[in-house]
Amino acid sequence: MRYRITFAAGLAVGYVLGAKAGKTRYEQIVRTARRVAESPAVQETAGVVGAQVSGAGKAVYGRVADRMPVSSLKDFLARPTDEEAAELSGTGPDGAARASGLNGSDSGRR
Image (cartoon, rainbow, N blue to C red; front, side, top):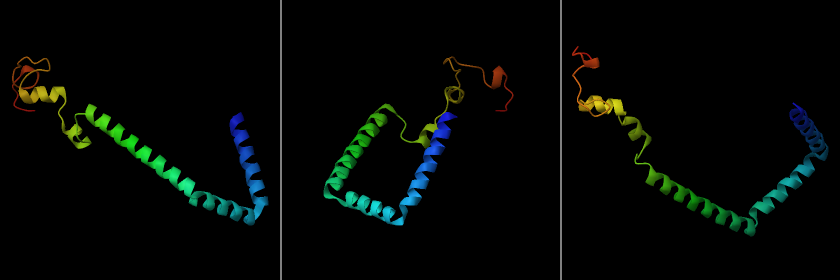
């Protein structure tokens, strides 16, 4: 609760100081921010960082793809569970042959 009150007080102080600074100060801050963002050094750094992030993303994707045999979520969801696979193959979950039907009875319904 103490942190919420501190945060609210800081927010209020920032609002009051920002309101007192007025529109001219706001426009000055915007001009400075645009000048910094458009500077060649910042643009170059942003390009380098973007390339590193892209390379890291490709590396992570490659590692995950190597460890995941499933090619898509759709394929993953379409795979039968162990129990479903055993039922389809006519064996029990332990691999032993089982009687036809559910619970060993041949009721004809599934």
